[in-house]
Length: 294
Image 1: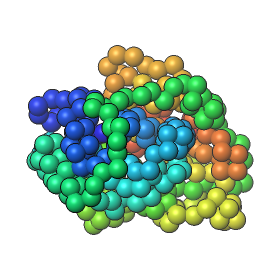
Image 2: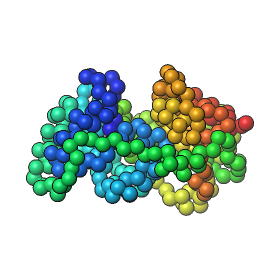
Image 3: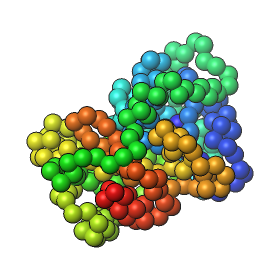
Image 4: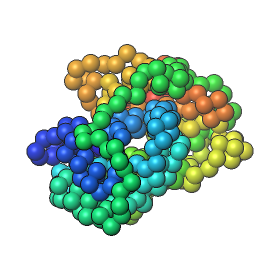
């Protein structure tokens, strides 16, 4: 999975970056069967689960994450989790260099001690599509309306960077990789304060802060039947992944935040009656909560 900062120079698309790093991965003993843009995979929990299903069918054993920042390139490797989380931790084996050749050469050097068992490795990267037919089952769960019974059960709110979040993949995005634990905790504290202020002004029902991973059964026992989920991505991509007609042009290419509510017991995802995403997460959350009253 590839994530590249569009501000990096020289300018490379994520496919061009995959092509540049591919021969280094092969030299290190890897057999990269498919490349995907990380930002596309993490658009939503449902989409991530669809990719995981496709990976299981291809008998994928490991995930390689290539992250290009303005000043460096990192390659991280970890075992496939065999479920929608895709990886279980951010503590993966990693190499960082000034560019793809530097990092790739380091990785290839570390792999020379082990003889590769790969016999039919392709010479060029492949970019298969996870088709609409494969993802339709999950994407149909997105409902353009509000959930019922919010006043009866608690709304769980996972904090970003906590183990309560659905996965660790987003950590390897070019704009997030490398943040210290202290910075993450400070951002969590500030985020909780900001969310709390917005919730107190716009949400009259009970909430539950989630900082530790819990099973659905444990959440339901605590009377948490709803989860507030935040996703971020290109507006057109988000809308398409949620079964909506995407906005085109400059508006569609903007990176926005969208909130929705997941009903745990039926695995249903409620988008609300109006599209209310925004570049500013606080406005996106305020818009979503106001639309819950409709």
